[in-house]
Image (cartoon, rainbow, N blue to C red; front, top):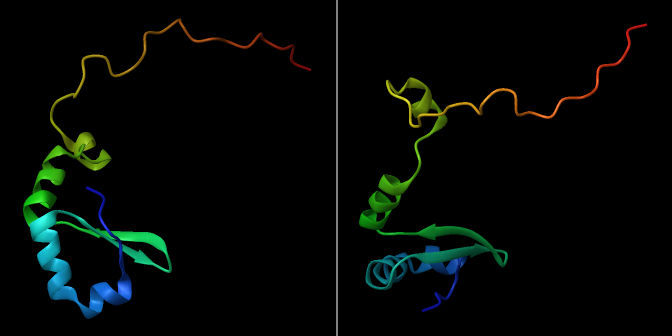
Length: 87
């Protein structure tokens, strides 16, 4: 079911209702000057989204193991430019 967006003024003025609707109906969209600005989600939903998110570049770089067997494409399959003469 589509969620009716909340203008930021209404979300601020009626925060308790805004929060209750989030908990009862799911994520609530907040708009600022008619443009989508933010989404309020329950803590459980936030934890689910965080668990499903891909790791950050920092986490990948400091990880002790590779996430894939092939980190670089095989050599020799790249297209090369023709060499030019040096002047």
